[in-house]
Amino acid sequence: MYIMGLLKLLKLVIKASVKNKLRGLGVTLSPLERTLLFNLNKVPDRVATILVAANTHPKFVDPSVSWIDLLDDVDKNVELTRKLYERFPVDCITMLYWGGPLLSSGLHEMGVPFQFTEWNYPTNTDNIIKVADDLDSIHPPEIEGYFETALQVLVKVQEELPDILTGPFISSTFTLGCFLRSTELLLEDLRYYQRFINAETESERRKIEDYCHTLGTYPTFFLDEMKTFGELVLKIVQRYREYGIDPTGTVFWELYASPPSLDVDEFLEYVYPHIYDMYKTVQRYHPLGITYYPDTLERWKLLFDHAVSDKQYLPTISLPAAVTFPIDEQGDLDCNHHEMIRLCKEYNRPYAVAILPYFLRDATKEEIYQKIKEIMEFSVQAQLPVMISPAALTNDTDPEKVDSFFQAVLDHGNYSQQPYRKLTKQQLKQCPVCHKPTQLSFEERRVFCPSCHYSAQFAGDEHMDYAVIIKANS
Image 1 (cartoon, rainbow, N blue to C red):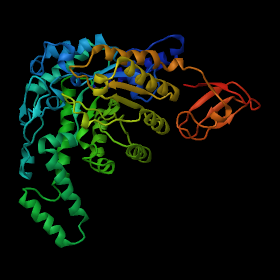
Image 2: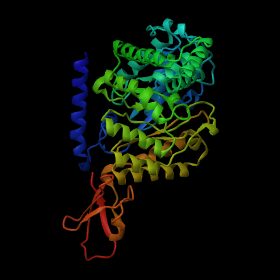
Image 3: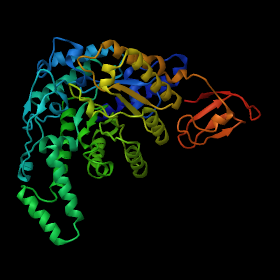
Image 4: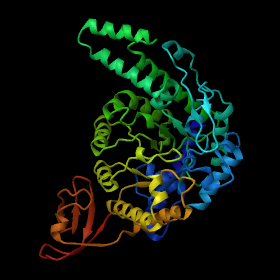
């Protein structure tokens, strides 16, 4: 079955690549083909789009439906997913079960208690790892209850909507641990471990050890926890595959490992090795990404530098986005998308853009269109593989505003129809993408940026001092 899955994926990728070479002749890719090329860091025919189903309030799709209605109803979850697909030009839909990532990772079946309401995601009400001994009683979820409902939804959507990418959405190692142990206690375990290994004297180490014993743990408990949580996630992935689910486009949800909980160096030391193990487990199915959110360009650079130096797989990482309802605006982070596109171009990484939900709710249709248009034009100019998403859709968001969002993508996200631009020779000496010095070849009439690999053809020669016309190469 594994070999057959790889062969199927390989055929899809080859077909998408061939069609993509013909895009200048008016050939368009299917949503699945477009998303696969994005995942492979290849520029498709246009910017890809994604919706997170369970980040869309049920009442946005159907005013008669609540979260409670969706907990056990497979058909209703599939129906809402289909309505989203038919309503908006979306290439990928993920987190298809409106029970959310916690139930779809089997936490309830592992014993974590939940509260269920009509107006919001199910939320966990307590942790089940109080002391170190509790770790031994944690076992992977059996395929039953809400976990089985989530699997059934994914199987049915993959069968009924084969033309788009619909991959599993699974809580990753650290974030899974936050709901089994609690974020506060898990971070406390990490801090005591760090103090223990950095202690300068044996006396200091004994004090830390004695204090941990009063808490029912021990100084290296954090490492054993992460090992157990990593094994749990791998087993959950195996459950998905046993159930017959295509893992292409798997997303590992690692929100709780983001700053300020863990800085990038801590993430790379304690969490990333487990994510890399997960990637190797799903082999060449190319996960869509991880929802880890560096909050500065410097932190992004650290991640990219790590991937380059260690030659390890670094999945596509999406941007900060609030996904709770109602929206807490104080918890949102914004981002300079132009700077991120420059950075991703420099490091040759694809870029997943998430537009914050309160902007979609509160801005006018014209403001939304203009914002997306600017991001699209910059993406096309950079010839960078980009996927864009409304991070979440609240129940009081006007659907016509979402139409405006997607229309701007369709109008301005076409990589094959890059507009000509007029630039002087002096302007050509600075890269329009990363603003670093370029190399000009008047014989070939070509400008090249050695920093971000931007390349363009231009009309004119070295004796011309007025504006020249350039067009970026694919």
